[in-house]
Image 1 (cartoon, helix red, strand yellow):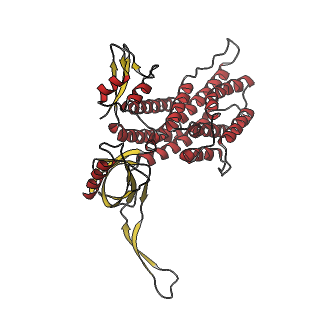
Image 2 (image 1 turned 60 degrees about the vertical axis):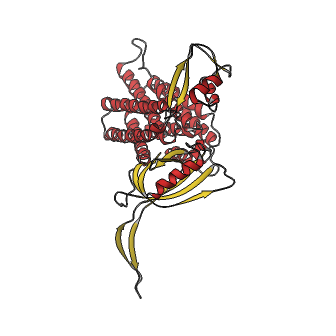
Image 3 (image 1 turned 90 degrees about the horizontal axis):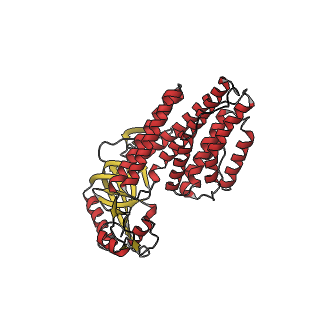
Length: 429
């Protein structure tokens, strides 16, 4: 169960969360008068934003459940403190009330329901939320990608070999999506927002009978049969929609991130069109390469945006993984910004650049909140072959992590750690 929750803290007391609920509104007095159809509302200003959080304390936390519970209760009793939340960010808040619950069927688990209000100034606007900024930036960037693609790609009125060459690049880029989407099963609620987003791009409503495999198969078949007649705008919706559907089809957020990275790499590896000497005019070659560039860009853009969208749901084992994602996102959006600046001049390109900056800032803030609490990745080279129990006891003082050592290093014989090669292990911070 604990893998489904993320770490948060208040006043330095650590706990787990899976969801939160914010409430905002206006204060006022409603007056009613005899023989009048309408009353009168006196606006008294904005309500203080209220943030409701369900905190989970377990034996996985330092000192065990009881110690973690007592630390949190002590912090809550002080009232004001800093809330560090995996997707809400860092905020100065005041605890207005909390309740503590135990259940005999949930041994080793304590639930604490907490209500916070912002400690700075009351406002009718929610506090800055990096996840909300990330998601809105991603939606805006996808729309800009579609607009830019529509302005650059065309197979209307060209020679047959020009259209065939353009489709060859499209078909090659779709092959990676086909392999991932063909493995899809019926998707449950965990990743349904990603399905909703992709289906929105296709302009189709999702109902209780929605089947991802059938929907994808039908979409790919339609695309392969009608690529010459559909408009660039419609083609863009299919490309972006299929890329987005790869996320829930991949299962976990980490697996989906890997697929988006593969799609990025495939789109980056495209080479310019090379025709045999005197077999094509320079204008035809120019048209093909313009279409190639448009296809490569929309696939790269969709891969980068959807990878960034996954940031709040990624599970990092150690700080090195978080740093790798941080570097990936910076590099990818810098590359896209450079391509936009050199190849496209349009209002959509300017908007895409602004959205990409918003995406990067929000994603890096989310990673930055998580990373400091993660373990470090250590490495040690043994001179001789050691039993795994010996190394585990020397590193940690107990044998609880022997299985992690064996799995992390893919040891062929589970009882022994090989000499002469580096052994990786986690270092708690």
